[in-house]
Length: 440
Image (cartoon, rainbow, N blue to C red; front, side, top):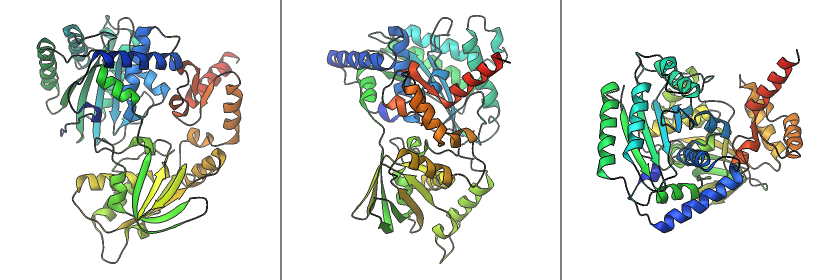
């Protein structure tokens, strides 16, 4: 198992905090609570608010965020626990992909004005239980069933990739309204925590991050970058702003980097086809084509290319500028190109990839494009059903009852609709199944 240091993009710099930051944070939180979680207590709402900010770059749905929110009685001092493999959230039904990276995120949120030793001690105690494989989770009588299930899921899922090469990171987030950094006593407890984890997982990289008012406020105010700028070699566009272009491979990979140098998941999220991993036969062929360029043979000749839907697209100089991009076909190619140039950052490659950018006039047209471009091979049927007229009808009818059907993942969260009034496809299917079962 290899190791790599991951530094959260919002963790650069020092603690430039003041009482003004604290008051601004409280105002931001109160606005969020009113819009998104008015029925929750201040404590529970703050935990949910913090989790949403910490995981902002993962672009998870409300249902996915709720799945790891552990705050409550007998929670072991952990308010949030999330396990990712290749930046994919691992849940009970998730098929674990071939691992490149694995990241365990643990969150402790306190609606308090400082950082205390007790919180770090609780993180230590929980971690001791988590990594104590000699004791089955059901024997942890001091933990509630939800927490025990979360521990069991992590152990079961991580065991599937334990023997394969991958980078493993454990990241702790301790978040409060503090306007001062953690003191030396807290830092000393942190060292005990890190030492314990290294005893259990010697190759893992362990990070403990302290978010005070300024840091939390910065993240809460930020929005994901939703613009791509691609350098083209040949391009033509139409009157509706749609374009077809040959884009330099390295330019394409560089445009997809987030602040951490990782692949921007938000651009890929609307795609209905999950990344199949580096050992997938098709992906192995893409890797081979990238590595072994033959003289006189262009990369785009051997690849179907990338399809992007967007709100607008324009040609500025030698760049294609795309607003609100969503890669709806070519996810496997995108991933492999990105990983290739991540490993070969200094390589100047003259080859190109064919990129289609379509600016659909309506939401229905947009979803017809998604359905058509992903209907060649097996795709999750639930994802494709979301593009059918029935689901537009469901969305419209539920709105009449102030319920927001999250047909497009994260759409209503971004509009700051209440968590309690958003229902996902999966939740709706479960409710329908439960109703049918109860009537038979």
